[in-house]
Each structure stands twice: as structure tokens, then as C-alpha cells.
Length: 461
Ligand code: UDP
Image (cartoon, rainbow, N blue to C red; front, top):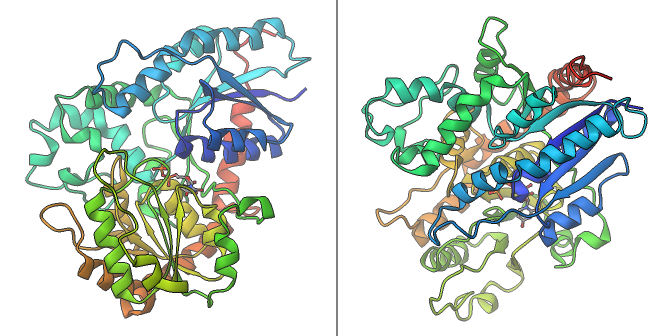
């Protein structure tokens, strides 16, 4: 029986999707995987978990209660607490896998626990049972570097990061202003910051960190993290692990792929701001007007905001005026298929890391429109360093005006700036393919990491 690895996913699609890909790669390398989620999965998560191959066992831990938290608790803090409160049931699962089947004859010998970025509380449980701990980091090398250096920054920076005069310089990374650091860094007095610091301090306890990035995308930052003389843990850059955009008829309930089939090659701007957040009504209205002004074709995934505002979307007459030039899809599109479609020529994105990697893997240039979490850092890097994205200017009220929307859309789809970033992203697409193919840097790192993961001599057989 193969060595078994337990992988604990944080809540949300942005965590689950890359972990499914990671699990799949480990299985192909001969390991058995138990993929653990917390609480009943959402409909979108269920669709993914239901389509797992038999070699990956999905386990859903009982939901945890968050009833004692104040009503205005930040979603991030709720996420942190969800993971820490699932530990008793995770302990039971790991105990079952280590003791009931100690010789590994039925389930495979348990060799490691892998958690993602806010799952380090599970290290205590695993270490107690002699199970080695690893991490899968689902964002950029630059973000990983920020987390690994956070304990030092916490001591050396005397003020709020947003008030720093000089930008933060992480080894091998483009300097980043304090205001562009990930959200929890924006207020050091808040619980979210304390939680992130708590996790970041524990990162170095991991035996290894699997990083969803690749050498051509972030060469100098990855070089610094993987330098043999750098402090442990070992970092394995194994990306880009993204879902493959293989088309099945069941994947197109909205008809957007069929609509794309009818559009000219490279002519459509795909617009999607991830699986979590929606834009406010003012921004939605400006975006709609700007798209109309731009004259470009677009496929727009719209999430309706959760507010009590009187909401009239799309604006009156918009659909008629746009005619066949644009398509609006509510809530969800099969993103990897859309990005892999020949008609798609650009991606207006919130720069979530999975969306970014999916764009790179499909050679699609971006309009960077960061919203939350570490997306501003991603945008700074994609525009200023990697040069595969262009970015609109945001008004003082935080809204991108229609004229600016129109300008940036035309710049990407038909301007010189667009040509530059398109050429560069095509190069990176090739780099990504090479990294993942046999003998490529990510393929080698994954094999090396999986070998280490599959060998555990701590647990008594
Ligand atoms: N996604 C999708 N269709 C949608 C919106 C999102 O398939 O309409 C997928 C997308 O392909 C990506 C993930 O959901 O794999 C979103 O992850 P990301 O890290 O980009 O952003 P998050 O949703 O975590 O903010």
C-alpha cells in the first residue's frame, strides 16, 4: 500500500482548487492522498470533490461553531478560527489513520500532513502523533517571502507598515509600499494581523513548503528562498498547478463557451473578480459604462453585491446597446476553459493567485484590478516586475471611472501596451509548460518534495 498523505484545505475555492491539483500530482507520483475539508462543502466545492479520482479520498470534518463570535467579525478571522477549532476532529482522523491501520495495509502508512497558509495550528496535533508537517503555499513567492520574514519585520518596523517612508524590500522581490502589503498588514492592532503573525511564526516548523509558483515567473525571489544556505524550511516551487481547461459539455450551463466559439480569435476581454467578492454598485455602473465606451468584446462574470441598496444591474438599456458584443454571466463561469479558449485575448482580474496562474498558463495578458487579501502585492509584481499586466488609475474615492475603464480596456486589447504584455505572457506560458514537463524545474521540485514526503520514519509501524 502506498504512503498516505493527509492534506487539510483552508476554507474557500481559492484554497481547494490548487490543493486538488497538488493531490492529483502526488497520486501520480505514487502517494495516496486524503483531502480534508471543514464542514459541509458549498455547491461549487462539492462539484469539485465529487469529480475527484478514486485515488484521492475526500473527508469532510464536522462543521465548527462560530456562534460565539461578534456579528462584525472579519471573514479572515472566522477562517483562522475555523481551522483552529477543527483540530479535535482532525486529531481523531489522524489517530485513526496512524493507529487503527498502523501497518498501513488498508489505508497506506500515514507519512505526512500538508496544510495551507493558515493551517499551521494543525502542526501541534500532527507533531504529537509523530506525523511530519508540510505546507502548500497557494500564492506567490513574494507573499511567501513576506510571511517568512514577518517575524523579523514585526520587530524591526516600529510603526504601521502603511506609514513607512521606504518600501519594504524582500529578498529578490520588487520593493513594495506598506499600503500595498496584504490586508492584515494594514492595521497592526487588529486580530487579523495577530493571527497572521501567529501563523507566520510557525512556518519555519514545516519540514518543507510546496510553493505554487515557478522559476521563470519569479526568478530572483525563488532563487533566494531556495538557496541552500537560506534558513529552513526547504521550499519546493512546484507551480503553476492549475486546473486544466478541458472542455466538457456539462461545463457550459451558461452557454458562455458556445458564445466564445462565435467570436473572432483573441478578441474577447474576460472579466472576473474571483470567487469571493463583488464590486460595489457604483463601480459596477462605471465598469459597465466603460466597457460600452471601449467598443471591445467582453465576457463578464458578475456577482451581485450583498447589500440592501436598490440595485439595478445591468444599467437600463445596457444589454440592448451592447448587442452581441458582450455577454454577462451571473456568479460563475468555467474560468480555465474561458482562459484557454482561442477567442479570449485579455483578462480583467482581481489578481487572485489562482486566476493569475491560470492566465499565465493560458498565455492571456491581464488588467490588474486588485481588491483584497494579497492582491495589491500581486498587482505590483505583475505590472512592475513580471510585466504581463497593465493597471487602471483608481479615483480618489476608490472608484475607477468609465473613461479610465475604456482607456485601459482598449490599451490591452488593441494598444501597444497590450502588445508588450501579450508577448511577455506568451513567453511565460512556454516557461510554465517547460517547468512542469519532465526534467523541468517544477517537475523536479515536486518529485523531490514528494519523495521526502513519502518517507517517514517517525511513526512506529
Ligand atoms: N473561478 C471560476 N469561475 C468563476 C470565478 C472563479 O472557475 O466565475 C475559479 C478560478 O478559476 C480560480 C478560483 O476560482 O481557480 C479563484 O481563485 P483566486 O485565487 O483567483 O481568487 P479567490 O476567489 O480566492 O479570490
